[in-house]
Image (cartoon, rainbow, N blue to C red; front, side, top):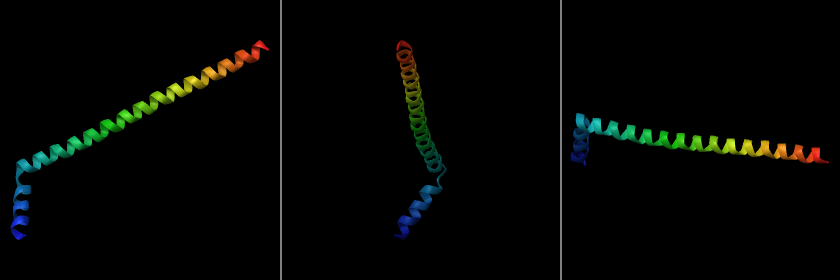
Amino acid sequence: MTQSVGAYHSITADKQFQYLETLRTKARHDEAQAISNARRQEREKWQGVAEENERLRQELAELRANQK
């Protein structure tokens, strides 16, 4: 067990390992950010569609009311 812990510490102290771990962390963050942005854009898109539908419903109701 002590050897395993020592090996782990020697690997994690290595500059190349630290660099690769930094890249992995950045990649995970970038992926999460991209997913979050895509979801936000999709919500905004559908919010716009819902607002347009509501506007059209109101316009149709006004037209029907004016025909009477």
